[in-house]
Amino acid sequence: MSTLAAARADNFYYPPEWTPKKGGLNKFNGQHALRERARKLDQGILIIRFEMPFNVWCGGCSSMIGKGVRFNAEKKQVGNYYSTKIWSFTMKSACCQHEIVIHTDPKNTEYVIISGAQRKTEDFDVEDAETLLLPADEEKDKLADPMYKLEHQGEDIRKKKEEEPVLIRLQRLSDSRHSDDYSLNRALRDRLRSQKKRVAEEKKSARKMGLGVRLLPPSAADAAAAASVKFASKFERSRKDKRAAIKASSIFPESSSSASKGKLDLALKRRNIKASAASLLMAGRVKPSSWQSAGSENARSFVPIMARRK
Image 1 (tube, rainbow, N blue to C red):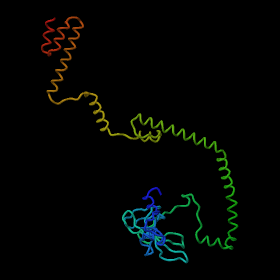
Image 2 (image 1 turned 90 degrees about the vertical axis):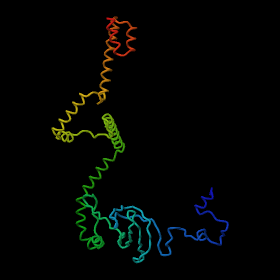
Image 3 (image 1 turned 180 degrees about the vertical axis):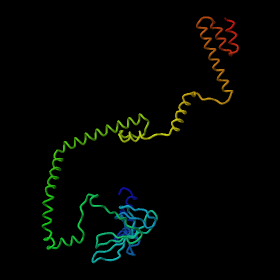
Image 4 (image 1 turned 180 degrees about the horizontal axis):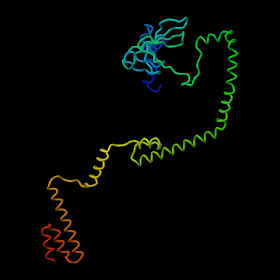
């Protein structure tokens, strides 16, 4: 070990006062090899990690506990079935700390809920699940009887003759489909490549429209559903009025005070005066010196100068 802490963590550290006559490290330290898991070992209880074997409903809060959820369970023996021990697992649910007790059933090779929960019943139809119907226990016992097998042997042979051509055709069809692995792989890759291109085009068109998600390709059903939707006349009228008001309004913000309106009118007048002065200058009817002196003054003193020059 590289460090003393690592040696202690792996129980490879032997203190100076330890001697081989005192036994192992666990005996020397006065602890069990399983540490906290064996704190109730004197009562015949061992703490283990128990995995729920099926879906159950919690008896405390009626929440579903899924198959495979793990718990810290207390394991102890509660009986025997012939020479096989029957174990009991006691645990607490994480949702409401309700106690759940589950026993093993060696006779039926099953787990049985004793208290604290209820098993979720899940029934499947053989045709919907596309599985085979297993024979019941009574049928299994009958199949072990030679006389019963002899009586039903003719019916089994007849079923075999009827189903054999179908099975042969299915086998040949499967062999023909999977005979050329290269062609199947190539067709699959081509289909995947075309699918990636289509998804990229849909994302690009969605970004152009400013959408964060891609749209599905249009269909006739969507077009028919969109055409069947009719908005109310009041909605159309209000939408037209709002559009007309938006088009008629100015893009500049308007002020409600009269002072701001007066400043705006004064600025427009000054712009018109400067434009007229510039046109006169281009025509040669006003000297630049007088135009520059007039531009530095206010609008009231600029108008008489232009009049005198005329």
